[in-house]
Image (cartoon, rainbow, N blue to C red):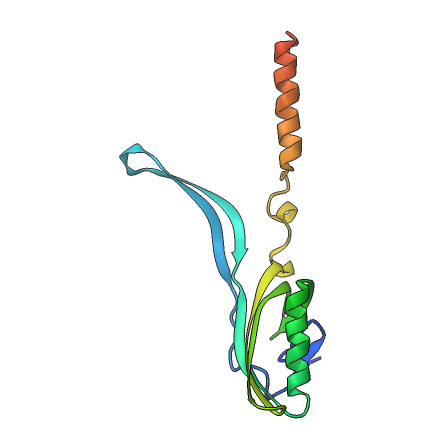
Length: 155
């Protein structure tokens, strides 16, 4: 399969409907603690993927039906696969707007997909092998506090 295909939730965009450019990337989620004297402590929380957004045009007898299928995908709010330029993301179509210029043959569209997973970045466990759920951490702290209250040495 060529790596220049744009596929969203099973819909393959043709040469005409594929946009000239696609964006990727995002931010590093972090918390910045500003301390007296101007010092900072920065806690990095991991990658925060940017929405993938693009615009384009549909042309032909299927233009309107493709637009309606994408709008139904948005309305359903389900996680779908997005593939482009050798990239893959699991996304939810968070915004889809289309304008019919000439029915049913020519439509312009704008689409925004919110990334739910980028497998290229790995999982939290891959980033931090000691990552533990908040429930486990709180449970451990509560057990420690109960042992202290009962007069049992936790060590």
